[in-house]
Length: 368
Image 1 (cartoon, rainbow, N blue to C red):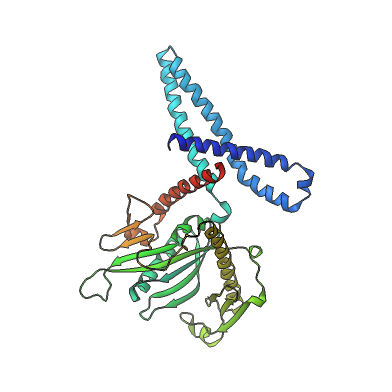
Image 2 (image 1 turned 60 degrees about the vertical axis):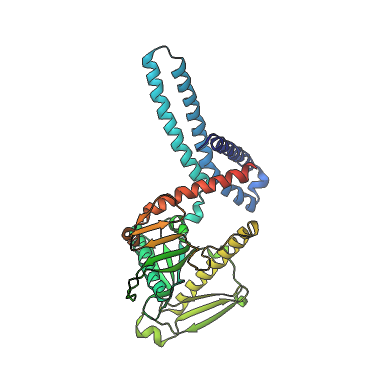
């Protein structure tokens, strides 16, 4: 972190510290206490600012100790005292650097959003049947990741290709801090390998698109029943004869937006409808958030693009047993380990990158 960035971070912390002081005073005023909406808003802000307030006080304390240790190291006549002051200086410098990283992460972390369950949608893109086979590999990768993390992954809806691969699948993943990690999976995943049907041994390139949609609470999105068309049909695919004989599958169309959601993994029509409504509400919420973001930056692309080969976030290269995440420079990852669900090294790098990007945006937005 250069000097300007350090100064900007301190200025940002000071601004957030002052905001905490101001809101704390507001929360003691009767007109705020008796106003439910204001009280709710201020309470939410103070819950975000309080940890930063405490860390900033700790930061100022360490910084003062560091200045004192440096001064003692300069003015001390005794050699042993200078050495002790030097050791203390190095320790405090490391403590300050570690605290800065924790502060930056706290500033940009949306605890509520990161803790949400998600709907993970995987679709075969360019590459035909080979893309559908790779989509199947990604489903296994995320299933293994869920096992390793202690999450649960339930199938909402699936469509298969003619050779048994997955054309499209929607998974409901539930557990702890899911969106903290899976938020980075949205985009185009490219695979380079020799298909089993390729007799000449030529490497093919195919793509699969992944969309991660955080689950929302019912109170966050309201639906007018008049805006919904609900169709019932017989489920297909795995599930036995029972699901094929009765109309348990549900398809819901949101008429104003044209969004269509299907669910057929449950044997109960009511359970399928409830799940489909959850998916629909989450998609509508995400669509509105994206619309707001795009109104700020009209050239911003949607999270998955069109599925063309060039719009990639990650490449899985089978001949070289290598995974390259194109948002991380200078490092590749072991293909077999990644496909077996070991995505921790990738997530660690992406989390650090995300913090740096967001902290710079936060500094610019709050200090300008």
